Structures are given as C-alpha cells and as structure tokens.
Length: 355
Image (cartoon, rainbow, N blue to C red; front, side, top):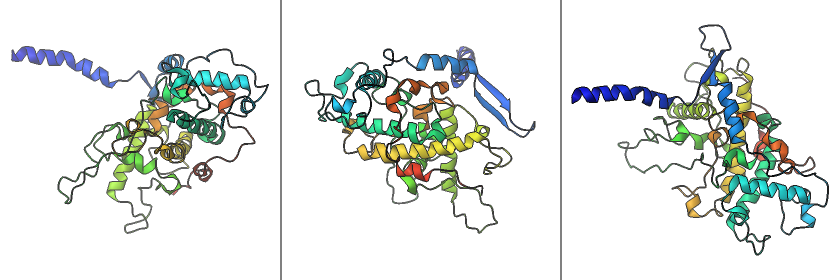
C-alpha cells in the first residue's frame, strides 16, 4: 500500500509542477552574460492568443462623431454630453457588453426614467467614465496611445475579478501573536509571507504616499530612516508588480544597481507612472465612492474594492497584449479643451531623480 502511495505521488508531481507554469516563457539578455540581466516574459504566441481572445469587437460599426450632442437630447448627461448622439448610444452599448452583459441597461438605469440617479451603479459608472477619460487624456506616460476602456478591468464582469481591500488585522496588546500582516498570504503580496498591506502603503493616499526608498547611499547612521519592516513592504509591492505583469525584476531594473535610474530600463519609468496612476485611481475616484457602494461591494474593513496592477494587466506586461482597443471609442478620450486632470496626476509629471 505504501508503495502504491509513493508511485501515485510521483506520478502526480509533474501535474502539480505544471500547474505552476502559467504559460510558455521567453527570455532575452539585456546585459553582459552572467550579470543576471535576463528578462523573462510570456511568449509572443501566448500574447497573440490572449490578445485575440480577450479584446471583444465593437458592438456595431463605429458611427461618426458629427451630429447633435448628447447633452442636447438626453437629460442628466454629465460626462459624455459633449459627444454626438450616435457616439453616445454606441458607447453605452459597448459599456453594457463590457460590464453587465446579462443585466443590460437596467444594471445602471431605471427603464422608466433613464435620467434618474436612483440606482447607485449609475453614480459609480459616471465616476468611472470620468476616470477613464482622465487616464486616456492625462496618463499617456503610462498608457501611451493605447488607452483603456471599461473592458480593460471588467472583462464582462460587473466587479473586476482582480481587486483588493484593506486587510483585516486583528488587534493584539502585546508583541506575542502580533503578526504585522505577515504570514497571511494574499494576492496583493504575490501570496508570500510578506506584509499583506503593502499595496495599501503604495497605492493609496494620493500625494501623501511614501515613496519606495529602502537603500541607503551613506554609512549608518544616515538620513535614510527606512526600517526593515518598510523594506519588506517594498519587496512585497515589487513581487506584486512582477506577478501582475508576468515579468521578472530586470524588466525594469539593472541587476548591477537596482536603485539607479540612469542604468534602468525604460520600462521602469513607465512602471513609476503606472504606480502614480493606480494611486490616483484609488484616491481620486474609487475611495470617494465609499458612501455610494452597498456593503456587499466593500471589504471587511468597509472600504470599496480598489485597483492594483493586476486589475488591468492580468499577467501580461501590457493589458490585452497591448491591443489598442480604445481607438474605436473616441468618447472615452478626454477632450482637448477639458479641465486639467486630477491633482495626483499633475504631481506625477516626472520620475524621481537618481539617488
């Protein structure tokens, strides 16, 4: 009997290890051999397959942008009032397919009074439309000309499957049993034993969020007061980014000096802007909706479901493999004459200087 169990475990081992492989990988060498500068990512074939499978076509042939404006025809149109009537209805049809394909228009609207705000999801959708326009118009240093749509996060679900909330940390008076969020594996820390609130430290708080600085450039004692516990949170955040994008550290960093900006790859600057963008999404758009969301749309600490890198990327270095889905939806791009974007975005105009 014991021999049979050993044989069964041996036979199952390849299957278990195979489950750890999310897809074929390819590596490229960025520096001298032996310097650890290999960049590992999913293969081009996998990217192409994901791109073809995940980006849905437009609901129908995109209409023109000319004609009467939506605000002159419909009541209580606060965000998309500047687009044409045909573009407005086309965009609404697409959003319905992206967010609530089963529920349809009634997921946000009262069919007896489409202008009413009595259903909370309409208030949320309006805020998300503002966010989408601000991302496409103000965060080109991260999303480029590819842009984003509701599908980038929702993928046909009313609630994006990849989200996070504040961890529920039990209070303990003494140091005994006080884990400080450690040994509590969650997706936001790549299921490691590192602190489970790392994402909250870097993707929440607007302009007050502390920058990730753990390396000292002088002998101890020096100006760097970062504690070991904070360094662990930085490492947890880096693991989250790596897992969310399906890449390794040297996609952004130079293994010779992880802190040096001058020798880093250009992807590090894009990632830096992405962190600021995610912070703006949570601080400027999602957190203010806390009084609007019902209890079943909040975490155990009463905060709304928030966004992190995985919400859009889903294991790819570029969401949807970089497919420019937003090009078919001009209503989701911020008009040139619109007011400046959120304050967090304005503060994130350039990455920090090399330490």
